[in-house]
Image (cartoon, rainbow, N blue to C red):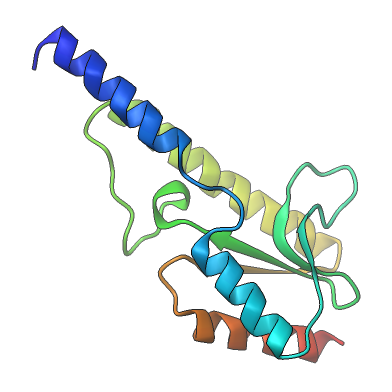
Length: 140
């Protein structure tokens, strides 16, 4: 691969990655629809804890349940994550940092009495909705 090809690949990858949605992804919207249809009400894209710059995709305030919809690539899913060959060190560090931040977020929420639920993008929406619904109803 020449330097020009490498540069073009880097620009192409950068462009593709910049187009990845971080909010309102397909599974996130589908999950919200099912939960709303089940009679559950929530806030979207909120910080469950004041002073902690971590935003949950769905927040059930009275029940103290925070739902995070995680992408397999960005959060390093054990089943579906892929490790890029180009700039491998950067991506490995990025994804491992995301994993550590996720674990830290879950721990902080637990300390404050919240339940953190992680939904992987590969999960069926129905299964995820059942898990979330059961947890919210149990904590009411």
